[in-house]
Amino acid sequence: MSSSSLPIVTPPRHRSQGKPALAAWVWVLGFCLAVLIATYMIFVEPPPPRKIVIASGGRNGAYFHFAQKYAEELQKEGLSVEVRETAGSVENLRALGQEDSGVAVAIIQSGLASPDELQRFYALGSLYREPLWVFYRGDKPLERLSQLAGKRIGVGPPGSGTYPIAMQLLAANGLIDSKTAKENSRAVLVPEKVATAAKALQNGELDAAFFVAAFEADYIQDLLNDGRVSLLNFEQHEAYHRRFRFLSPVTVPAGLVDLGQNIPRQDVALLAPTAVLVVRKDFHPALVPLLLTTATRIHGKGDAVSEPGEFPSSSYCDFPVSDDARHFYKSGPPVLQRLLPFWVASLVDRAKVMLIPLIMLMMPLLRVTPPLMRWRTRRKIYLWYSDLREIDQRLITGLSGPELDMELTRLQDIGSQVAYVDVPLSYMKEFYHLRLHLAMLQQHVIELLGRADSIAGDPKTQESHEASSTESVDAF
Image 1 (tube, rainbow, N blue to C red):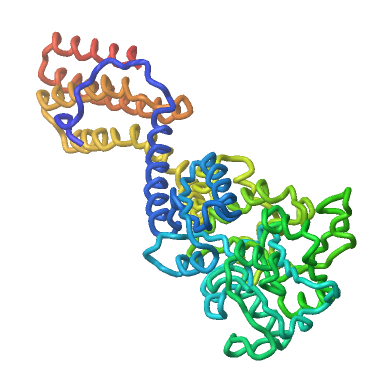
Image 2: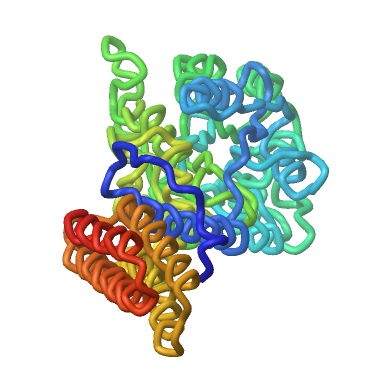
């Protein structure tokens, strides 16, 4: 290195001895950050959507009511929810299968989906029971659906939740053709709306009627309190459950409707499909525990036909339950979602896939950083030895008096610059070795100058060089 390429010397400032280490760490962390960003872009799944659409039901129905509760609860977690009003479960199922509908979640009654539809979607769980009520007229108690042969039976309109359940159970009892789903001579099916069918049954226009409705529904309460109609007791409820897994057995205890009048007069066994929370197969997995945690708050308290803590549940679902939902029922919400806000927990959870490659990257970097820092610090000292070596080699070849003066000036300039080299205290040994070697070389040049002046016979110049020699040694 030539003296002309060296920086201009300025007085030292109060600088931290940790700046070299800080610079090395900044470089390492910057590199890790770049790799982290690249890994995130390549391997990490996209974040969950900020808005979802839930297909519910009619504005006056239970599905719409519960969907509104979901929207209110999820809004607290920063998730926007659009509750879409529909005609019921059949339309919900259709909307869920349409890519352009925007519907990602739907509340659907169990037992409605075709085998093909059952493979297209996932269930997150059953939410609550919707009892199947079969009311009939007559004084003679009925124990089986097969005893409705020859009767006029209200089965609900096609497209309703009642109609497919009624068709399956009537077919299982041989009252209709199970292949064509049309009535035969053994029964007369009347596809009336539930409110119309309830009035027709009370007025004697129907002999029996199927209803899938909540216990609190007004027309169910009216029929339960009407002495002209009776509620069918499903004594074969366990057999129905074995054949139709989406139906759960439920008991209406005596006196539940009216304790004073003891209505019903005895325990009545019923069957109940369930309201199921259904999603598309591409539904974001991070939203599954959030929805199920919300469902637990809304449905976990139980109702007239279910116990507290019974719902939501992975049971009574005809759709396959997603793996993420099964993990929730087994282990509860993820730890991160228990401790952090949802969106922060989601980010950390998605970023965990980068943890292993980041550790693998950091290990060699952490190992190479200390040697790198040592090399950078020692380089500040050793780079001056190239100048000292160059001057020493020139001295061996023999220099004239003016040339020796130039080399001495150069050495003095190097000494001034070396005095301001900033290195940690732990490197002072190498630093003062440099100073010592610099002083030795200066002394050698001065001695050579003294010899040259003695030969030339100039005592003043000799005295000047001797003074320079003394100053060099004193400065060191």
